[in-house]
Image 1: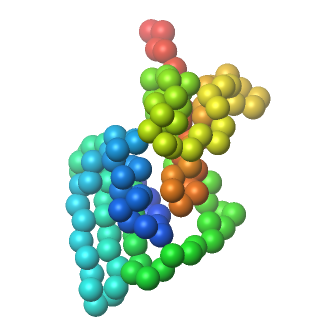
Image 2: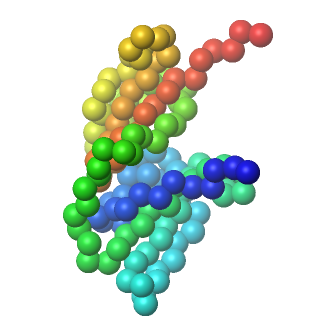
Length: 131
């Protein structure tokens, strides 16, 4: 077994695609309209779906408001340098909601950003390997 994808409902598909591809550097892996169901699915990721988990962006035609709820936490992405990544994201118009720094009660360096719909994305700085 393996994780295939995480699905997020989005209010503006083009804006979300721009965020995930232009700001985070993912690629659109596939996209399909479902006219009878009045929705579009777009899958984005860093790798092909057969090699890694991806994000499914679901746009329900005509829906422009969603409640994020309290059960969903965040998506996590590993980065080389959390502070530098925050600076790059901010320079491209992205929203940093927690600057890079050690997590509470630990030493792992993390930061948080938000996508256009308010979903949180945790940036986790890759720990140097000392073998």
